[in-house]
Image (tube, rainbow, N blue to C red; front, side, top):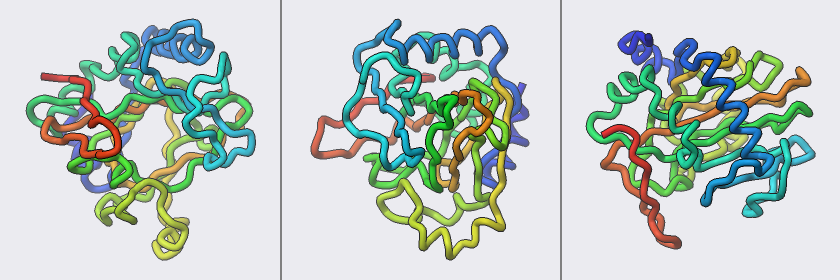
Length: 252
């Protein structure tokens, strides 16, 4: 069981908190198996989103808009996983529900459910970024994400890294996403960075505005991580160029 009050105190101060082990061995095995089945095309769901990783290790070189490229274990991310019954179990995990409800009263929806994959060859290095801003196309920036390790993520194996307290600085740019190099330099983040290694099954609660990144894995082992971003029912999609998105209901 998660100590909700203690977890939220730490989250509010630092922008992130390790929640301990949420997923047991049986669920881990199911989720790992399903992630591989999806990447290999052995299980398919209409509407899934795929992005292949880059061979250079620079995420900016990852191809955009190509989607499914055939069976491969080198996809960088798989999105819309609320379509899959195995991942819906984790999105609605009973250990996470009290925590999410403490932060989001009333009806809870989902912005995205996504697996980030760093293949055994190393994967990509992800720079400092924030998961908010105009890029997300929302009426208000979300705050609540839970990232769960499906594989071990040691310091040399693609663990998450944070700048504690950076969620209180607001958006580095109105657009959001990657934090510009000049802003990173001004904040002297090298002296502040905290690496957060986790073992498979452990979850991390993070604020969408906290600066976070992850390096390549140099262990020779794959690193799968699952991220769910929860929304309040009063947050809506405001994009104009496409039909506004509707959001999957997690908790009534």
